Length: 112
Length: 111
Image 1 (cartoon, rainbow over the protein chains, first blue to last red):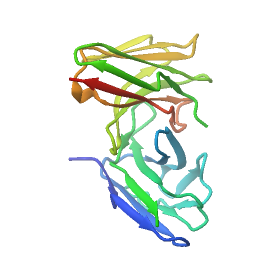
Image 2 (image 1 turned 180 degrees about the horizontal axis):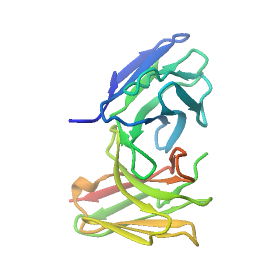
Image 3 (image 1 turned 90 degrees about the horizontal axis):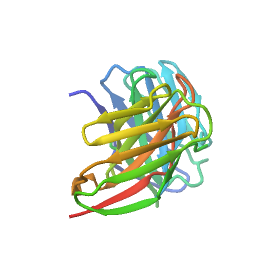
């Protein structure tokens, strides 16, 4: 079955560490997105990519980095520059503007 | 920036009742979408309504869109305990721009 796989489901980060969240899709979708969700809040856009080897900053890109070397993969790195990284991270993709997003099941990141 | 705002923030109803959630937005849109999120899970796309449409149905879901008032509503008829979730509206300001999500309505359906 086609879908989006996010891993790991839970991730713990020590102060000063960089961590990478994985997002893989086998839907053949061009566009992929990373959103952050804080408790009781909506989703805020971190980065997005409309096509391989191209990506744009979203509303809260500071302290994060991404790459899009393959159509299937859009990993998100949370760097030590992100001062408040504890949140639920959601990856999504879509085939084109006339369709909704398909979301992964999320990664919960906690700073310890 | 969050464009959509859902109302109410939380809603509690009995099984079998209808649930209505509203969404207001600020700028012109290409389409508006509704999503459901069960606790601790990813979002699931429910329905998309284009700016030139006024009403759309999908099973027990009915969505309306009033572009003159910049508002939309989601009606879930004959609700079930399994409908308990958070519901988000999301707007697409123009064709290929990323969706902008509201803060959601938490729906509790009591059996």
